[in-house]
Length: 246
Image 1 (cartoon, one colour):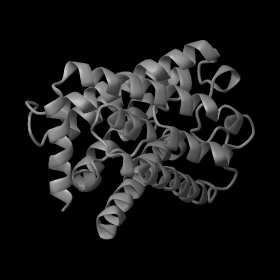
Image 2 (tube, helix red, strand yellow):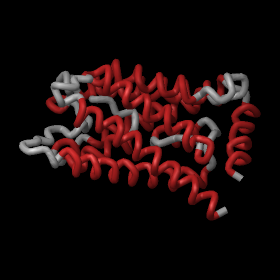
Image 3 (cartoon, helix red, strand yellow):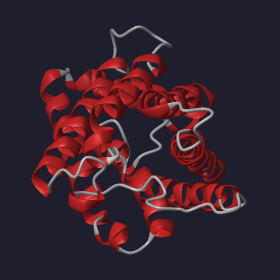
């Protein structure tokens, strides 16, 4: 049992590390480099690809959450055991912080580098498009709601087996395409926490929104899944996940 939990926690750590390092790294390193110029489209795909690749790499071990809002949303849907919630979230947050630290070490090696927002999330003056609190709150709620809705739907009985990572990764790409101008896209409290700790100041002060809104959106989506999908289907998916790791 201890080995099982250790494998799960490790999977969530590395998955969240890769998501934060790959997605935020694309924004901090590549998007800011004129010769590359991947822009909003490139950063959006970077985040989607991190989830897609890690979903197939370690998703069969832990379920591939990589996000506290996903963990709590799946818990709300009956798809995550109580004993996994806190360890998963702790591993995710640590993974994101370590990833942000590694990214900082790399980025700061360039002469004259200015960290600015360091890919952190924000509202008001810290929003890329200067969107207010209400707009950012609604954006994060709606985007995380649909992200969880897609996750639950594509991993339920009757969905195409073995292909869930593709629509989930593409969903995260679409979410970033829409919401980067508004909040710089969170939908993931761990991803928000890592960069904010290094950006400092007001970015840390605004972290509350990027914990509250994604978690509420995810939990509501999970609760809706209990109504839309048959209860025995949701229970069965948990059993399947447990057997895969055993």
